[in-house]
Image (cartoon, rainbow, N blue to C red):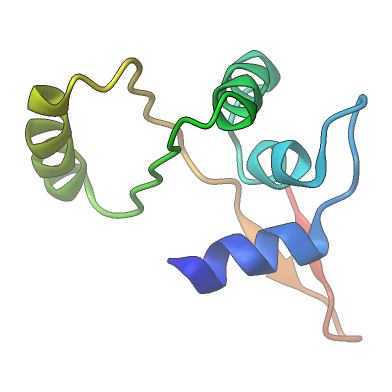
Length: 92
């Protein structure tokens, strides 16, 4: 999972004044309004937990996290990406 985040951060294009973290989250398919909420939470020293998996895994993760008092849950479809001949990726 850490590799995915680092890759997203490395490939992120700053969008609409978002930080590198915000741009990385946005580039993976998280809506901008949610990204702004998550950026604010991280700046306030809160944790951002990202779970990547199939529907059953998402359900299980939610079951585990709900009793902890997590303040917000979001489920987003990751943007698809395609490798180009030069080795870079294009998201669509």
